[in-house]
Length: 501
View 1 (tube, rainbow, N blue to C red):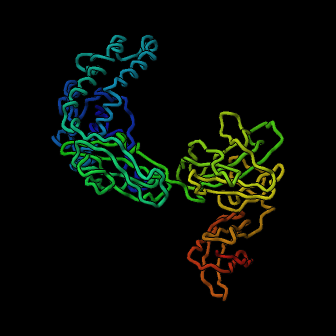
View 2 (view 1 turned 90 degrees about the horizontal axis):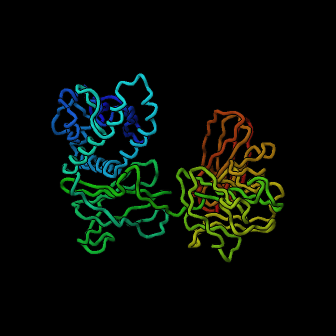
């Protein structure tokens, strides 16, 4: 009912292309919504208020009454897209109009500005028109503004019998199995669907990815129970750090989503993280309570290395190798490239996350595991420094080093304590990280085997001076043994023995 837009006047919208090459719309300027704008194409249709209540949602496809609107018509000619469009319209009506939400909101706004409108000497309508128009048509006879409630009531009544709004499939009991999912393993998705001729699972393993679609079956061969029992199933691979999905079901005339707001909302589950996805990033101990700030207390810092928001479910911290389930983390989200701070032995205020245990200053352990015992990360140490912390350097990936505490911040070591070129971890089972500080020139990396044969060479072109450059080499393909890495930069070079386990 907003003709001051692409569906009517073909204005008041932007298009932008996202990172996946898809065009999206950004609508704006909704001040002429709810049938209050009937110019241009509305005039050619002689679009009265009564006709506005009965405006066909597929007008552009069925009647060509408007100026051509290819961005809509080319989608509407595809039966599935047409049904999806109507399914979303049905959700809008259900969530905003049938429940009277729109009227309650409008009443609040009217009450909020009532006195200001009454005292406004420059308004284009009478105060009576202002109060009446919430429910009935108002204004001069030649240019009536539709009453909000009377128009919406007419619209609800018209759409209730519109083909595609009723008789839609009912989707329920959406589940996945197994309950605990490992990354890069198969998972079954099932749902009970009635009134459908076809069911489709749409899923993605990254929050930025396009949803992929596979058919779901009720044949007794897809973890769906007995054939013909209205339970549909499909198996897909949980390839990423997250898994988001929705169900689409349709019949000859209509369709429905689960959840109804797909693709803006979706079902999801969190595959268990792999080692290095979320790590123990820094530990600080202070035995001289009370503390002035959280930073002064004893704490553990977890860091999410991934590009996804990670939900930690059924995860534990412990200082006891005989009881990995010593303290359970609450189900919590660590945003991408962000930190989760946990107070040790109730160091933080009570409304924050605190463990029930502390860790000793000497010869201690800290385990980060799942309930199943699957390790996520671990730390062992001989001595925790006084007034300092131990943290991974580089942040989130490197070995533990002594440093000034960086509470919920990027771990760093003063440049005076860094060597110009270093590699870690060494020995390594796969990736070998390297860094060069005080960089002023390009860097060359070469790797030789034990009989001096060059097996790897790479040139790195750097355009920033006085910066710390960090990168990695995947050595997983190498056989276990001793190798030599030669790094050359700014007329300097160093050779480091590396061990591949």
